[in-house]
Length: 100
Picture 1 (spheres, rainbow, N blue to C red):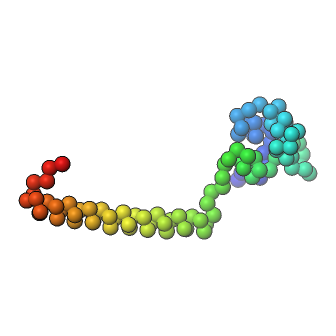
Picture 2: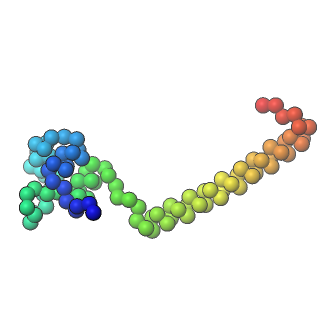
Picture 3: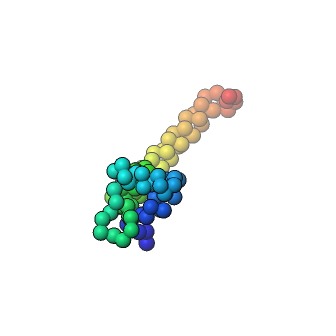
């Protein structure tokens, strides 16, 4: 299970910078230290928000995306069939010699 907090070393690795740079971010107030824990720790969600990492989708968002995907697959299938029919009709109209 992933920890809910990051150490200075973890943040430095994630940001691809030195540990002193992480301390500078903390001193400037960009990263806030979690109080009440041994050592210097940072809230995982705050660090990831700073880096631009977003959470996975919630179950509701996932279901909505799955329904949208299924709907798009069905629409794609219908469009392919319509294209086949139009192509077939065109071939009949030109006598089977459609040259592109």
